[in-house]
Amino acid sequence: MSTIAEIDASAGAATRRWEHDPILSVEHLTMRFGGLVAINDLSFNVGRGDITALIGPNGAGKTTVFNCVTGFYKPTEGRIVMRHGLGRQDELVRQVTDSGLRWKKEGGQGIFLLERMPDHEISAKAGVARTFQNIRLFGGMTVLENLLVAQHNRLVVASGYSFGGILGLPSYRRAERTAIDRAVYWLEHTNLIDRADDPAADLPYGAQRRLEIARAMCTEPELLCLDEPAAGLNPRESAELNELLKFIRDNGTSVLLIEHDMGVVMEISDHIVVLDYGVKIADGDPTAVRTDPKVIAAYLGVEEEKEIDVPEVLEDVVEQVGELPSSLAPQPQAAPEKPADKRQRSGATKGGKS
Image 1 (cartoon, one colour):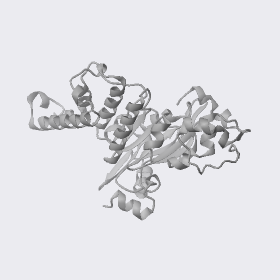
Image 2: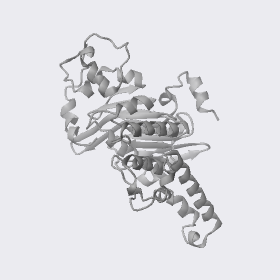
Image 3: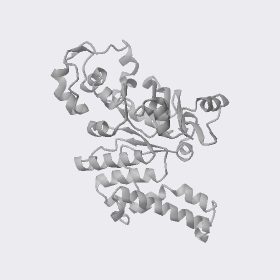
Image 4: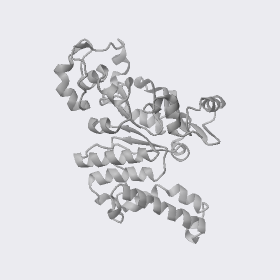
């Protein structure tokens, strides 16, 4: 089987895995809530082994995309393809799509059509884990117990769906030992091992954020979806989060995150997708996205008829999207044209889904 590095070399673009080795493909996704269009014909890929950031102003539709990927919403239109194994696997995707199946594994490969799957299968079979904007820990349980809860399904299977745990069957004892070892591993890598026996509710805010990520990682996901993991963190905690996410990526788990902290996004992302009012306006590496006039206009709220004078707004842009390269053109640029009916079609999302 080819390695990721070999596929990168053959494609001639080791930093653009989302194009030739996507683990997740969102294809022509549309999500309507009655007459409100939250997501309109959205397509993008998440590269295997990449950190992909999904960004945009409030109300852009980011969380709605997450809810479609993880099964909380069933999209109105479109396809969401999750791949196990390297490469695009186009023939296997076609077979699963045409046969009406939800998923299929063949050899070392697997295709999962997430829009057809219930949320529990997306987690258990497709290997997608997520965290939420608001922390959702079991505050009365210890830190260690929170990580063992994430592995409950494996322990139930090992018990034979009966009294295996009570009777102490060897299969259950082995599974329990593995679960504890996995929990300890992630406690060590999130600097929480000294708090293992403390109630989760007693942890400071930043530590609770790390515990949520550790709990998700105890499910051994192929894809980790993080909804604003840096929200409310101080600079030291944000730096710790950056190192944790890079460690997760470097050890084989792909990451898709929503984040408003552009310092975090620009430092750790391999690939960025930008939404505005449910429509993709930019898609590329951080260098390309941070200088895109459409992105600058969306974040600064520039109206369609106005011109974007880059030197004039540079100070505000730096605050929003990080330091800009010196090669940024100093001439004024006209704001990109948008379809005349765009805001009529989906403008209600400003105060709706994000």
